[in-house]
Amino acid sequence: MAIRPADHLAIIDAARVLRDGGLVAFPTETVYGLGADATDGRAVARIFEAKGRPKFNPLIVHVASLEMAAQLGVFPEQARALAAAFWPGALTLVVERTPDCPASDLVSAGLSTIALRMPAHEIARDLIAAAGVPLAAPSANPSESLSPTLAAHVAEGLGAHVGMILDGGPCPLGVESTVCAIFGDEVIQLRPGAIPRDAIENVVGKLSDRALDEKHSPGQLARHYAPRTPLRLNAETAAAGEALLAFGPNVPPHDAPSRNLSPSGDLGEAAANLFAMLRELDASSASSIAVMPIPSAGLGEAINDRLSRAAEPAS
Ligand code: TXA
Ligand code: MG
Image 1 (spheres, rainbow, N blue to C red):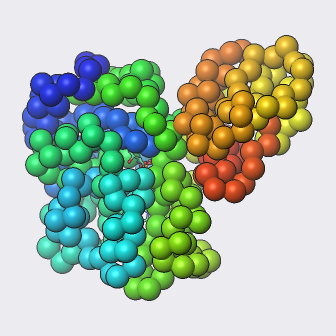
Image 2: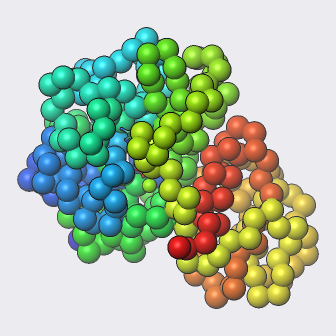
Image 3: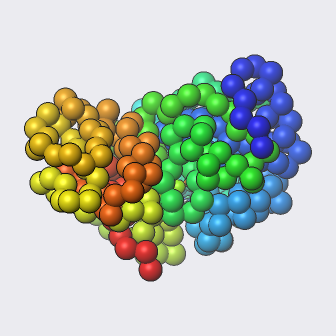
């Protein structure tokens, strides 16, 4: 495995690794992705092996243009409106596969749908364009563990399995994309993420509150995004032996190892810091990590979703 600064030459080399069926980790505006040529079933299978990901959990396919997206998925009006409003960006759209969809069936894990996203990060866009194929890319971490927001996080978790890691520095948003499924006129949020619910509802109106069954929303494992150290949520302060993940200006006095997601109480800053700070506190030898309450508005929905899954005990 080689970590390389993502300059022009490294991107050209990475595109070659991808065309040869290899895996390349690359930065996006949300988290680092573990990419493979989405049209090559053997390459896609390597992603599942590297992550230890259950085969029933489908992958997001990343595109560099609307033309590429239209070859893969059928866009009803609401999907077109969402793509126009948020692409390139941190919104993933789950739509029906086209009849002659060139992506491997493995990316859809047996469903008739495909998840598509056009990332905004320049390195991701350049890489897809250089490879000339859509890229299947889940977050570049072992299944269930914390998502990577730095190249070093990828090396730590998956180093042995990746052909190349393109280093583009820290991911600016820090939480994964919002995933929405579109069925005709109905829009269902499958995963809260970096685009808040309100912003989506401004474009398509109220989201449907119908919950999809597990088969159609297979990604919502109760335990996910989890550090090794247990989490204690909505904590007032740290108890003896605990570490403290604080939020906002009013942090009670403590002598625990601590990080503050955002001293000014800014949810965007908190999202960007979330996974890296959880990793740092996970490395302290605390018995558990006490997490102060985070407001649930806007990006708080995604932050609290990740925290509650991280707090779920290992089975
Ligand atoms: O920000 C992101 O979305 C990052 C970057 C790398 O793009 N990717 C990411 O991928 O978070 P992953 O695999 O960790 O999460 C993808 C989510 C999973 O919950 C998966 O179940 C869901 O999207 N998903 C993918 N395809 C689907 C489909 N056809 N139907 C329903 N859910 C799908
Ligand atoms: Mg993931």
